[in-house]
Amino acid sequence: MRRELDFLDSETTLKRLVRIGRVALMQRTMKEMRNGGDSSVDVEGKSGFGGGLEDVYGEDRVTEDQLVTPWTVSVASGNTLLRDPRHNKGLAFTEKERDAHYLRGLLPPAVLSQELQEKKIIHNLRQYKVPLHRYMAMMDLQERNERLFYKLLIDNVEELLPVVYTPTVGEACQKYGSIFRRPQGLYISLKEKGKILEVMKNWPEKSVQVIVVTDGERILGLGDLGSQGMGIPVGKLSLYTALGGVRPSACLPITIDVGTNNEQLLKDEFYTGLRHKRATGQEYTELLDEFMCAVKQNYGEKILVQFEDFANHNAFELLSRYRSTHLVFNDDIQGTASVVLGGIIAALKLVGGTLADHTFLFLGAGEAGTGIAELVALEVSKQTKAPLEHTRKKIWLVDSKGLIVSSRRESLQHFKKPWAHDHEPVKGLLDAVKAIKPTVLIGSSGVGKTFTKEVVEAMASFNEKPLILALSNPTSQSECTAEEAYTWSKGRAIFASGSPFDTVEYDRRVFVPGQANNAYIFPGFGLGLIISGAIRVHDDMLLAASEALAAQVTQENFDRGLIYPPFSNIRKISAHIAADVAAMAYRLGLASHLPQPKDLVKYAESCMYTPIYRSYL
Image (cartoon, rainbow, N blue to C red):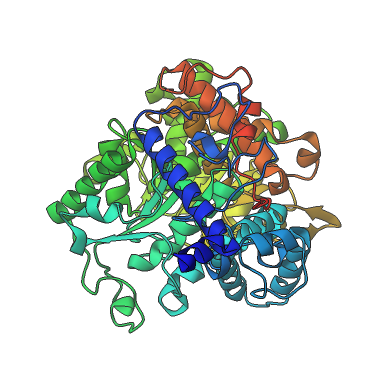
């Protein structure tokens, strides 16, 4: 009995018992909430947090400064806390936190602020000369200190975006097997067929709002990378958080592994995926159907599923099949289209005229090309009230066989047929440029160096300010470089690309090339769907996002030849895009978070995740 009393008198034990009580309270609270308790966000934004989902202890709230207990499955403390990336603060733990959470002696005695930690990391990153090494260092940071990773990315977005996203992410995917250290995201392969829902429940986070999924068949312009395509969903979702403010725990990257047709990977001893040819036909369809059903069953009607880097033959089919039953979005088709349309709308301030006055020629008639073309036609139709069939006639596409014309209609894939206009056959791009005389030339072919000197000079011969968009990624696959576009057009081109290019000096003038980066659109677009509780994606939401992006380009940007705003303002840009997308969702009757907040921009900002360290006392 005396031994038991001594045991209970132990200060350490009492602390542990108090913590056990807290865990019980947390579990009871969570149970009550699952059984109908209300913890929804105040629609006026008074207590908005992390993308609008329940946040029991307020950890992701940005509108309140409060103390937070670092909950995991139990109260994290000691070595467990230091190895939990969501709550780890490294040397930023205060003296009181070190005592309260059993960290004394597990850390050096110095206490460093988050700002000082950030300064050290960015200094170290700049020492790396190889971009892939920077990528690996950033991934290591994300795996050990989540908040520091996102603060670093937000504060240095223009410098680090090319590291965590295109172009470096492309090389990372190619070498994913060799640099693989620990799994990020959920892998669903043919081995899991028939039990996908069960596998999905293995993911530790239950309040997921956004899934980015790929099958790895068409990674950027690099082709079939199989399961190593996981780098794309991971990278995209880090931008959902950094640029759009969706909290990290609400993001789920998924790779669907049905095999690969890449012989080099199949022979690579470090390859991480299934070692057989890609499954197709009924087997593939059944797996995707099971996956989409499991997603809705596990996460509900409002879970956003973003398809990423599927091959053309599957991308259009999947979007068409699920857009009426799920909240789905294809970034390659719709996101690219929206960001390019936004740039074109902004460029009208420089090139003059209305959208309907211009003639468009695309090199590439796949997901990106036809997606952009359709959204441009929709915007012209909206502005002029003309039928869509009419507005498509000023948009021409060139594929590998030449200009898409009506005489080729029978042999065309279904998504190309709307662009088969009456014209005599034309084989090459240069001949098509001379025949059509476009004012806007857009490259989405995935083939580098296709905007030759002759093509650019032809564009400049009948346009005072030719608009040239070389969108293919990564940089090596760009249709032309910024320097080539400016030099060959004698400094008259308005240029933007998919991957970043450095500034160009020509004829004693400095040109700043724009980047038509999907990261302008999808984070804010996704946030808009989340804060409105949208249940479906409508084309008018994409138009709203494009117009919102164009509205963020200032006169100062135009004076530098830019048709996109700087990424340094991306969170503000995302908030405005989210507000306009949400407003459209309410207008179309597709929003479920009611009533509508009075100020959607403020509400979007209040819902954004912030990576500032919390106090754990």
